[in-house]
Amino acid sequence: MRLPLADRLRALLRPPAAPGSSDADLAALDAASAKKPTAHSATGSRGAAPSGGVPREVLRQVRLIELRTRGWVESLFGGEYHSIFKGQGMEFMEVREYQPGDDIRNIDWNVTARIGMPFLKKHVEERELTVLLAIDLSASGQFGTRGRFKAELAAEIAAVLALSAVRNNDRVGLLIFTDQVEHFVPPRKGQRHALRLIRDVLAFRPRSTGTDIDHALDYAGRVLRHRAIIFVLSDFLHPAPPANIATAAPTGSGGANTSGFGVGTPFERTLRLIARRHDLVAITITDAAEEVLPDAGLLAVVDPETGQEWVADTGSPGLRTLYTRDAAAAREALRRLFRRLGVDEIEVRTDASYITPLLGFFRKRDRQLKR
Image (cartoon, rainbow, N blue to C red; front, top):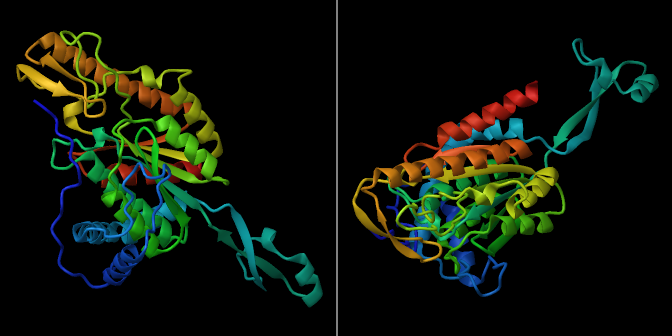
Protein backbone atom coordinates (compact mmCIF):
# COMPACT_ATOMS: atom_id res chain seq x y z
CA MET A 1 0.00 0.00 0.00
CA ARG A 2 1.35 3.41 -0.93
CA LEU A 3 0.12 6.42 0.99
CA PRO A 4 -0.31 9.11 -1.72
CA LEU A 5 0.74 12.69 -1.12
CA ALA A 6 -2.13 15.00 -2.01
CA ASP A 7 -0.87 17.93 -4.05
CA ARG A 8 -3.75 20.08 -2.88
CA LEU A 9 -6.67 20.09 -0.49
CA ARG A 10 -9.77 18.54 -1.95
CA ALA A 11 -12.15 21.06 -3.53
CA LEU A 12 -15.33 21.61 -1.56
CA LEU A 13 -18.71 22.39 -3.04
CA ARG A 14 -19.84 25.99 -2.96
CA PRO A 15 -22.38 26.46 -0.16
CA PRO A 16 -25.64 28.37 -0.62
CA ALA A 17 -25.53 32.08 0.10
CA ALA A 18 -26.36 33.03 3.66
CA PRO A 19 -27.51 36.32 5.17
CA GLY A 20 -24.60 38.39 6.40
CA SER A 21 -21.99 36.31 4.60
CA SER A 22 -18.58 37.72 3.80
CA ASP A 23 -19.03 37.78 0.02
CA ALA A 24 -17.96 41.41 -0.14
CA ASP A 25 -14.81 40.70 1.82
CA LEU A 26 -14.04 37.65 -0.31
CA ALA A 27 -14.65 39.58 -3.52
CA ALA A 28 -12.29 42.29 -2.33
CA LEU A 29 -9.79 39.59 -1.35
CA ASP A 30 -10.03 38.07 -4.81
CA ALA A 31 -9.56 41.43 -6.50
CA ALA A 32 -6.61 42.32 -4.30
CA SER A 33 -4.87 39.01 -4.94
CA ALA A 34 -5.29 39.46 -8.69
CA LYS A 35 -3.72 42.91 -8.63
CA LYS A 36 -0.58 42.22 -6.63
CA PRO A 37 1.01 39.68 -4.30
CA THR A 38 -0.28 40.07 -0.75
CA ALA A 39 1.69 37.29 0.89
CA HIS A 40 5.40 36.86 1.08
CA SER A 41 7.45 33.74 1.50
CA ALA A 42 9.89 33.69 4.36
CA THR A 43 12.28 31.66 2.24
CA GLY A 44 12.23 33.58 -1.00
CA SER A 45 11.12 31.67 -4.07
CA ARG A 46 11.22 28.16 -2.60
CA GLY A 47 7.54 28.07 -1.65
CA ALA A 48 4.57 28.69 -3.90
CA ALA A 49 3.14 31.68 -2.10
CA PRO A 50 -0.56 32.32 -2.74
CA SER A 51 -0.19 35.68 -4.43
CA GLY A 52 -1.97 36.56 -7.65
CA GLY A 53 -4.43 34.34 -9.50
CA VAL A 54 -5.88 32.47 -6.53
CA PRO A 55 -8.08 29.64 -7.88
CA ARG A 56 -11.80 30.22 -7.51
CA GLU A 57 -12.16 26.87 -5.77
CA VAL A 58 -9.87 28.13 -2.99
CA LEU A 59 -12.07 31.17 -2.48
CA ARG A 60 -15.09 28.88 -2.35
CA GLN A 61 -13.34 26.84 0.34
CA VAL A 62 -12.65 30.05 2.29
CA ARG A 63 -16.33 30.97 2.04
CA LEU A 64 -17.45 27.53 3.13
CA ILE A 65 -15.13 27.43 6.13
CA GLU A 66 -16.11 30.97 7.16
CA LEU A 67 -19.82 30.09 6.96
CA ARG A 68 -19.33 26.79 8.77
CA THR A 69 -17.39 28.30 11.66
CA ARG A 70 -19.15 31.66 12.03
CA GLY A 71 -21.85 30.37 14.33
CA TRP A 72 -19.33 28.81 16.69
CA VAL A 73 -17.21 31.95 16.71
CA GLU A 74 -20.12 34.29 17.41
CA SER A 75 -22.14 32.22 19.85
CA LEU A 76 -19.53 30.28 21.73
CA PHE A 77 -15.84 30.64 21.01
CA GLY A 78 -15.90 34.43 20.80
CA GLY A 79 -16.89 34.84 24.44
CA GLU A 80 -14.71 31.98 25.64
CA TYR A 81 -11.74 33.38 23.77
CA HIS A 82 -12.21 36.82 25.31
CA SER A 83 -12.47 35.43 28.83
CA ILE A 84 -9.27 33.37 28.79
CA PHE A 85 -6.95 35.54 26.70
CA LYS A 86 -6.62 38.74 28.64
CA GLY A 87 -5.06 41.98 27.47
CA GLN A 88 -1.75 43.37 28.66
CA GLY A 89 -3.23 45.83 31.16
CA MET A 90 -5.97 48.37 31.87
CA GLU A 91 -6.41 51.72 30.20
CA PHE A 92 -8.04 54.71 31.92
CA MET A 93 -11.31 55.67 30.22
CA GLU A 94 -13.19 58.22 32.35
CA VAL A 95 -14.40 59.10 35.84
CA ARG A 96 -17.97 58.73 36.98
CA GLU A 97 -19.95 59.37 40.12
CA TYR A 98 -19.76 56.73 42.84
CA GLN A 99 -22.80 54.47 43.17
CA PRO A 100 -23.69 52.18 46.10
CA GLY A 101 -22.01 48.82 45.66
CA ASP A 102 -19.02 50.14 43.69
CA ASP A 103 -15.55 49.02 44.74
CA ILE A 104 -14.11 51.80 46.90
CA ARG A 105 -10.62 50.86 45.73
CA ASN A 106 -11.45 52.53 42.42
CA ILE A 107 -12.27 55.92 43.94
CA ASP A 108 -10.34 58.79 42.37
CA TRP A 109 -9.46 60.74 45.50
CA ASN A 110 -8.14 63.78 43.63
CA VAL A 111 -11.41 64.28 41.74
CA THR A 112 -13.41 63.44 44.86
CA ALA A 113 -11.58 66.12 46.87
CA ARG A 114 -11.95 68.71 44.13
CA ILE A 115 -15.68 68.19 43.52
CA GLY A 116 -16.69 67.31 47.06
CA MET A 117 -18.41 64.02 46.26
CA PRO A 118 -17.01 60.56 45.50
CA PHE A 119 -16.01 59.70 41.91
CA LEU A 120 -14.59 56.48 40.47
CA LYS A 121 -11.96 55.82 37.84
CA LYS A 122 -13.32 53.70 35.03
CA HIS A 123 -10.88 51.52 33.09
CA VAL A 124 -11.18 49.31 30.05
CA GLU A 125 -9.02 46.34 29.24
CA GLU A 126 -6.15 46.99 26.87
CA ARG A 127 -6.52 43.96 24.63
CA GLU A 128 -4.17 44.56 21.73
CA LEU A 129 -3.20 40.89 21.80
CA THR A 130 -1.07 39.29 19.11
CA VAL A 131 -2.00 35.78 17.96
CA LEU A 132 0.25 33.72 15.69
CA LEU A 133 -1.03 30.60 13.93
CA ALA A 134 1.96 28.34 13.22
CA ILE A 135 0.73 25.60 10.87
CA ASP A 136 2.65 22.48 9.90
CA LEU A 137 2.05 21.73 6.20
CA SER A 138 4.63 18.95 5.90
CA ALA A 139 3.73 15.89 3.83
CA SER A 140 2.42 13.92 6.80
CA GLY A 141 -0.42 16.43 7.04
CA GLN A 142 -1.69 15.25 3.66
CA PHE A 143 -2.89 12.06 5.29
CA GLY A 144 -6.25 10.99 6.59
CA THR A 145 -8.32 7.83 6.70
CA ARG A 146 -11.49 9.11 8.32
CA GLY A 147 -13.02 11.54 5.86
CA ARG A 148 -10.51 14.40 5.74
CA PHE A 149 -6.82 15.10 5.76
CA LYS A 150 -5.06 16.41 8.83
CA ALA A 151 -4.19 19.57 6.87
CA GLU A 152 -7.88 20.20 6.18
CA LEU A 153 -8.68 19.92 9.87
CA ALA A 154 -5.82 22.30 10.68
CA ALA A 155 -7.21 24.86 8.21
CA GLU A 156 -10.65 24.83 9.80
CA ILE A 157 -9.34 25.12 13.36
CA ALA A 158 -7.08 27.97 12.24
CA ALA A 159 -10.15 29.69 10.80
CA VAL A 160 -11.99 29.50 14.13
CA LEU A 161 -9.02 30.92 15.99
CA ALA A 162 -8.35 33.68 13.44
CA LEU A 163 -11.99 34.80 13.33
CA SER A 164 -12.24 34.68 17.14
CA ALA A 165 -9.12 36.86 17.40
CA VAL A 166 -10.27 39.56 14.97
CA ARG A 167 -13.74 39.53 16.50
CA ASN A 168 -12.04 40.61 19.74
CA ASN A 169 -10.00 43.25 17.90
CA ASP A 170 -6.75 41.34 18.26
CA ARG A 171 -3.99 41.03 15.70
CA VAL A 172 -3.47 37.64 14.07
CA GLY A 173 -0.62 36.41 11.89
CA LEU A 174 0.31 33.23 10.06
CA LEU A 175 3.44 31.11 9.86
CA ILE A 176 3.46 28.10 7.53
CA PHE A 177 6.32 25.67 7.99
CA THR A 178 7.67 22.29 6.93
CA ASP A 179 11.32 21.60 7.68
CA GLN A 180 11.80 25.28 6.87
CA VAL A 181 9.76 28.42 7.37
CA GLU A 182 7.98 28.72 4.04
CA HIS A 183 5.50 31.55 4.51
CA PHE A 184 4.94 34.30 7.05
CA VAL A 185 2.21 36.95 7.26
CA PRO A 186 2.72 39.61 9.97
CA PRO A 187 -0.10 39.99 12.50
CA ARG A 188 -2.83 42.47 11.62
CA LYS A 189 -6.45 43.16 12.56
CA GLY A 190 -9.67 42.88 10.61
CA GLN A 191 -12.10 40.38 9.14
CA ARG A 192 -10.65 40.68 5.65
CA HIS A 193 -7.19 39.95 6.99
CA ALA A 194 -8.47 36.82 8.78
CA LEU A 195 -10.10 35.59 5.55
CA ARG A 196 -6.83 36.23 3.73
CA LEU A 197 -5.00 34.01 6.23
CA ILE A 198 -7.52 31.21 5.71
CA ARG A 199 -7.04 31.60 1.96
CA ASP A 200 -3.27 31.39 2.36
CA VAL A 201 -3.48 28.14 4.33
CA LEU A 202 -5.71 26.56 1.68
CA ALA A 203 -3.80 27.85 -1.34
CA PHE A 204 -0.21 27.40 -0.20
CA ARG A 205 1.80 24.63 -1.80
CA PRO A 206 4.94 23.96 0.27
CA ARG A 207 8.15 23.21 -1.55
CA SER A 208 9.53 20.87 1.13
CA THR A 209 8.00 17.73 2.64
CA GLY A 210 9.85 17.33 5.96
CA THR A 211 9.17 18.66 9.45
CA ASP A 212 11.26 20.92 11.68
CA ILE A 213 9.16 22.40 14.46
CA ASP A 214 12.26 23.65 16.30
CA HIS A 215 13.19 25.94 13.43
CA ALA A 216 9.64 27.26 13.10
CA LEU A 217 9.41 28.11 16.80
CA ASP A 218 12.83 29.76 16.72
CA TYR A 219 11.71 31.91 13.78
CA ALA A 220 8.50 32.87 15.61
CA GLY A 221 10.50 33.87 18.65
CA ARG A 222 12.66 36.17 16.53
CA VAL A 223 9.86 37.93 14.62
CA LEU A 224 7.54 38.43 17.62
CA ARG A 225 8.95 41.33 19.60
CA HIS A 226 6.33 41.24 22.36
CA ARG A 227 4.53 38.49 24.22
CA ALA A 228 2.04 36.71 21.97
CA ILE A 229 -0.28 33.72 21.88
CA ILE A 230 1.21 31.09 19.58
CA PHE A 231 -0.98 28.21 18.40
CA VAL A 232 1.10 25.42 16.85
CA LEU A 233 -1.08 23.15 14.69
CA SER A 234 0.84 19.97 13.84
CA ASP A 235 0.81 16.20 14.11
CA PHE A 236 4.15 16.54 15.99
CA LEU A 237 5.65 13.56 14.21
CA HIS A 238 9.44 13.26 14.18
CA PRO A 239 10.09 10.77 11.36
CA ALA A 240 12.89 8.26 11.78
CA PRO A 241 13.75 5.38 9.45
CA PRO A 242 13.22 1.92 10.96
CA ALA A 243 16.31 -0.03 11.93
CA ASN A 244 14.95 -3.30 10.61
CA ILE A 245 12.00 -3.47 8.26
CA ALA A 246 11.29 -7.01 9.35
CA THR A 247 10.62 -6.01 12.94
CA ALA A 248 9.99 -2.26 12.91
CA ALA A 249 6.87 -0.35 12.00
CA PRO A 250 6.83 2.61 9.60
CA THR A 251 7.16 5.93 11.38
CA GLY A 252 6.70 8.61 8.72
CA SER A 253 2.92 8.51 8.94
CA GLY A 254 2.51 6.68 12.23
CA GLY A 255 5.05 8.15 14.58
CA ALA A 256 6.88 5.34 16.35
CA ASN A 257 9.89 7.43 17.33
CA THR A 258 10.10 9.01 20.75
CA SER A 259 13.63 10.41 20.44
CA GLY A 260 12.46 13.78 19.14
CA PHE A 261 10.71 14.54 22.43
CA GLY A 262 13.42 13.59 24.92
CA VAL A 263 15.04 15.78 27.55
CA GLY A 264 17.81 17.93 26.15
CA THR A 265 16.75 17.56 22.50
CA PRO A 266 16.69 20.68 20.27
CA PHE A 267 12.89 20.48 20.27
CA GLU A 268 12.75 20.48 24.08
CA ARG A 269 15.19 23.39 24.38
CA THR A 270 13.39 25.54 21.81
CA LEU A 271 9.99 24.72 23.27
CA ARG A 272 11.15 25.70 26.75
CA LEU A 273 12.53 29.04 25.54
CA ILE A 274 9.43 29.98 23.55
CA ALA A 275 7.04 28.86 26.32
CA ARG A 276 8.80 31.22 28.76
CA ARG A 277 8.36 34.25 26.50
CA HIS A 278 4.97 33.52 24.95
CA ASP A 279 1.66 31.82 25.66
CA LEU A 280 2.23 28.62 23.70
CA VAL A 281 -0.66 26.27 22.86
CA ALA A 282 -0.05 23.02 20.98
CA ILE A 283 -2.88 21.62 18.85
CA THR A 284 -2.01 18.01 18.07
CA ILE A 285 -3.80 16.54 15.05
CA THR A 286 -3.91 12.75 14.75
CA ASP A 287 -5.52 10.04 12.63
CA ALA A 288 -6.71 6.66 13.88
CA ALA A 289 -4.52 4.79 11.38
CA GLU A 290 -1.44 6.25 13.01
CA GLU A 291 -2.23 4.44 16.24
CA VAL A 292 -2.98 0.89 15.11
CA LEU A 293 -1.39 -1.03 12.22
CA PRO A 294 -4.01 -3.00 10.23
CA ASP A 295 -3.65 -6.71 9.62
CA ALA A 296 -3.25 -6.61 5.82
CA GLY A 297 -0.37 -8.95 5.12
CA LEU A 298 2.73 -7.75 3.30
CA LEU A 299 2.51 -4.04 2.53
CA ALA A 300 4.85 -1.82 0.56
CA VAL A 301 4.76 1.49 2.39
CA VAL A 302 6.43 4.84 1.83
CA ASP A 303 7.36 7.61 4.25
CA PRO A 304 5.58 10.70 2.85
CA GLU A 305 8.23 13.07 4.21
CA THR A 306 11.45 11.25 3.28
CA GLY A 307 10.25 9.10 0.36
CA GLN A 308 11.85 6.02 1.88
CA GLU A 309 10.10 2.77 0.98
CA TRP A 310 10.10 -0.61 2.67
CA VAL A 311 7.99 -3.72 3.09
CA ALA A 312 6.22 -4.48 6.36
CA ASP A 313 4.57 -7.77 7.28
CA THR A 314 1.44 -6.42 8.94
CA GLY A 315 0.20 -9.97 9.36
CA SER A 316 2.74 -10.38 12.16
CA PRO A 317 1.09 -9.93 15.58
CA GLY A 318 4.48 -8.98 17.02
CA LEU A 319 4.92 -6.18 14.49
CA ARG A 320 1.42 -4.81 15.08
CA THR A 321 1.99 -4.91 18.83
CA LEU A 322 5.33 -3.16 18.46
CA TYR A 323 3.80 -0.50 16.25
CA THR A 324 0.92 0.20 18.65
CA ARG A 325 3.26 0.22 21.65
CA ASP A 326 5.77 2.59 20.06
CA ALA A 327 3.09 4.92 18.73
CA ALA A 328 1.54 5.14 22.22
CA ALA A 329 4.98 5.69 23.77
CA ALA A 330 5.71 8.56 21.38
CA ARG A 331 2.35 10.14 22.16
CA GLU A 332 2.88 9.85 25.91
CA ALA A 333 6.41 11.27 25.63
CA LEU A 334 4.99 14.34 23.90
CA ARG A 335 2.30 14.77 26.56
CA ARG A 336 4.88 14.55 29.34
CA LEU A 337 7.06 17.14 27.62
CA PHE A 338 4.18 19.58 27.28
CA ARG A 339 3.19 19.10 30.93
CA ARG A 340 6.76 19.55 32.13
CA LEU A 341 7.14 22.84 30.25
CA GLY A 342 3.67 24.15 31.09
CA VAL A 343 2.49 24.07 27.48
CA ASP A 344 -1.26 23.59 27.04
CA GLU A 345 -2.22 20.93 24.52
CA ILE A 346 -5.43 20.39 22.57
CA GLU A 347 -5.75 16.93 21.01
CA VAL A 348 -7.97 16.66 17.93
CA ARG A 349 -8.63 13.76 15.57
CA THR A 350 -9.67 13.49 11.95
CA ASP A 351 -12.49 11.10 12.93
CA ALA A 352 -14.10 13.35 15.54
CA SER A 353 -15.34 16.90 15.95
CA TYR A 354 -12.76 19.48 17.05
CA ILE A 355 -15.46 21.51 18.81
CA THR A 356 -15.45 19.47 22.03
CA PRO A 357 -11.67 19.48 22.67
CA LEU A 358 -11.35 23.15 21.69
CA LEU A 359 -14.21 24.17 23.96
CA GLY A 360 -12.80 21.95 26.70
CA PHE A 361 -9.51 23.81 26.48
CA PHE A 362 -11.24 27.18 26.75
CA ARG A 363 -13.24 26.13 29.79
CA LYS A 364 -10.26 24.52 31.48
CA ARG A 365 -8.31 27.75 31.05
CA ASP A 366 -11.23 29.73 32.41
CA ARG A 367 -11.37 27.57 35.56
CA GLN A 368 -7.62 27.97 36.07
CA LEU A 369 -7.88 31.76 35.81
CA LYS A 370 -10.65 31.87 38.43
CA ARG A 371 -8.67 29.95 41.06
